[in-house]
Length: 249
Ligand SMILES: [Zn+2]
Image (cartoon, rainbow, N blue to C red; front, side, top):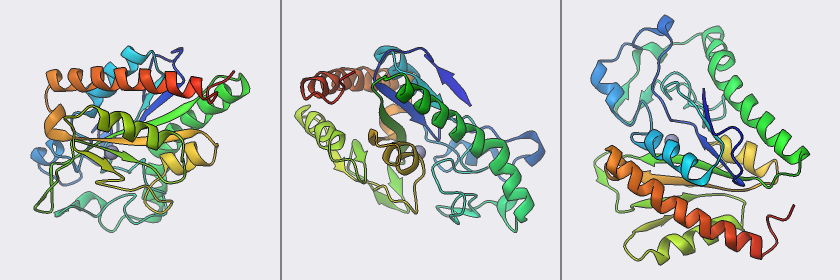
């Protein structure tokens, strides 16, 4: 787990479930060639640089998972079959096949639970202290999935929050040069997601996910550009939410 800007004063609390691609030494390489760890199946390519820069620009607390989603996916309910994927896109993950229940729960205890316990603690403390808190889950998506090219530059992901996502969509569309996905390329659901349903919706926080297309943030220049753009947009959103009395404390 990685945290940045723990004392950040922004109302936005940033999470990044697929920030890193570390494999615990005991699991070796999961039976995969090194090239697979360059791909989106191992992590959200490019998002770490965006998350770090955005956290700084917004003065926002960032909580990020440095272990690979191939070990255990921190944005899946642990009981979902895709929590520890045997297959990701078209790649078989040998180290995940035929996993015993004990081995799966060991990964959950070592990686999944501490990460989510920490997010839960941070939200709990902020709510107790009356600190306005808006959850933003950062992700990136592969430009081509299963042979199909994706047109969106960025997408919002949400399920039950009716306050923040429409506002974010409005500001993203106002940029004028972006193809914006509305719950594309993914939509949030209780069965396929964890961070937004559990930490956002069950806590009653305004929340949204963001997905940025990976070819746009493949290098540090792109990451910085997107962090700058998002910092500006979230600054405007903060002003709008305050004007509506939604960040009152
Ligand atoms: Zn992701």
